[in-house]
Length: 370
Image (cartoon, one colour):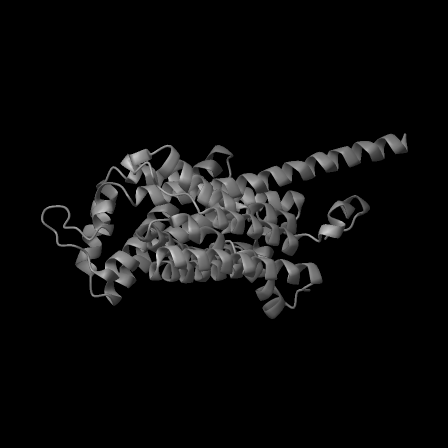
């Protein structure tokens, strides 16, 4: 009898673990879809005119380099996260968790989640969008996604520096693999695309640093928070900060406040807004499934499965903007070069080495984690 109970418990634990891995993998795929639709939105309607350096609207002059680089990135990131926050609140409402949402934001874990949103939202997301825009202008936005996926390696290093977390041999090997893959992708991108690739990779690395630091800090805050509530706090905070504080602040710094108002008005009345609503929809599960998967299969393995967006990001950009040819993009829209696809897969392998000790991956049944 006791043996049957033990077997049933083990079977239930195994199914729970497998579901957690599925959630974590789905989070990486949703991140790739969010990246693909966000990139598509910024090629459509008035966005395409802005990035092409053309006059737009009713005789408005072409935007300055500052506006194209920083204001448009903040605007796109803010709109995306704002709608992602709305989707997240709708999910909470569907599950009758709005009351818990308001209660949680007043607690210490809730405040820590808002701090994570400030780090991973206005800082990392804007840098990520700047990198996407720079790489798009150079002809291939997909190349920066694996660079941004270095957040796992950076998170491991920051965890060691700030929180004295153990840095085992397999983590060091994984970090070295990720750095090699990043150098491989960045080097071939620079050779093929020119100086724009260097700027894109630099901002992608800053984004990875922000998300890596967010991952370190979020560990405490997410332990006691339901994943739906956690993502709602994260995305609502990020959307409000980026759209209503950082975007106007950048406009003031650049002396282009009137331009920023015109940009926001045009963006919210553009047909491309629907695409940003879609990208915000996929941004919600990209993070919420990550939180859910981590709680079910362990943060280490969950982070590794989520980190597969190093592959899914370029893949879905290629599918949406190349194979499906959405929005009138040229049929020859380039996928990654073969060496860059290889680099993305190497990056995924490195992330797994950081998160999970390959020699003890299957030792979980003995109660041991990598």
